[in-house]
Image 1 (tube, rainbow over the protein chains, first blue to last red):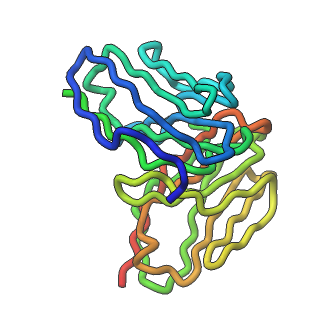
Image 2 (tube, rainbow over the protein chains, first blue to last red):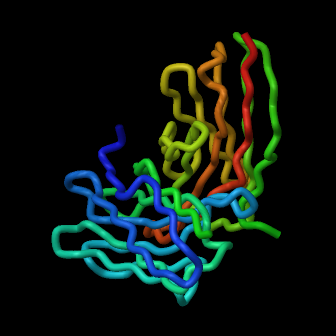
Length: 112
Length: 111
């Protein structure tokens, strides 16, 4: 158990809908990273937050947004969902910004 | 060209073999180097974490970083069937902005 929690574990929704994925980092970790993992794209970095502020952006679509709250948990919002958004979404955390050290179990999103 | 290149395999070895997994990269700004193990449908698990060049050993695992050649390796000694998984290399820049992952190498250790 990495100490990073993610909810929900599974999410099934329809195209055009909006969903919110939640991540709680390990106790004491200030950085939160979001990743998308699909069969054809591998593990893709989406966005990083550090102590409530956006620190880095990767290949995140404009339909996606994220935030980190004062209690350091983070939410990833995915809107206008498309079939191609079906993937595993992972959250990771670390104390500083030295890289994604601890991963959560992921949320499996299926868009029908 | 991808920033991080990793042979996806699959790599199949007999139990007890020494496994060598490798990645190359193109950006000399990478300072932090990591290896993860990922079982099917699970989150990646951090195995090794190194800063800059050199070797690091942890039990049956040894990580090597050669920054002059932009080449990193993970060696697994006395491989076990439970080591069967996908191994991902990853690296991040100085200051820790975004981590770039390799495609992952699928490893099968046969009993």
